[in-house]
Amino acid sequence: MQTAGTSLKQRVLRKLVRQAHHPRGVVGWAIGQMFAHRPSNRQRNLWAVSLLDVRPTDRVLEIGFGPGIAIAELARRATRGHVFGVDHSQAMVRQAARRNAAAVRARRVHLAQASVEQLPSFGDPLDAILAVNSAGFWPDPVGRLRELRRLLRPAGRIALVSQPRCPGATRDTTVRAAQELQDLLTQAGFTHLRVETLELDPPVACVLADNPAGMP
Image 1 (cartoon, helix red, strand yellow):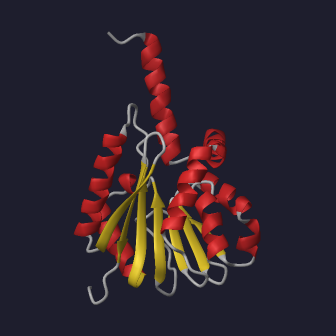
Image 2 (cartoon, rainbow, N blue to C red):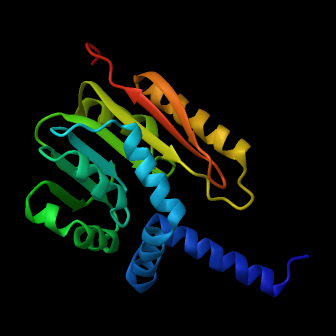
């Protein structure tokens, strides 16, 4: 039997999940601050960036950048390149812009409020794309991934990261999430898939893949 206290707890949890997906207002700002300072989130984002092997002249896109932790690390590595970021939360755009203010002023980091369904133009082809805990929310993810593949240069890289946040998530939850991401990437035409795991609680899976040359 569900008690009033349990029902209230579930409503609060659902609200927090919604805010985590689309932070807004004062609560969204606070969640962004929590994400930015939680050690496991910082570790996960820095680890994911390291797997992309970003070079100094690379042009990189992050989808759903949150408070801008990974954006800062991408900019630290792409010193002569460009880092683009899109997030559908204006609160996160403001936080990430403050965190990366110097690189934004230098026009090395370009942040926009946008969704994966309506991406802005990035000019020349991209070298790498990163998405941390966001692909699971995309409508028609295979279609989105096909569009992203067209934005990549031949042999460009993509990294999709998943750390399940559902109650009771375990290593098995992460394994299933990684397999789902692999299936989506394969259907979208990516190749050379591999999975890396970061031992947090629950574990983090990063699925990396390449854009094959000569494919439409």
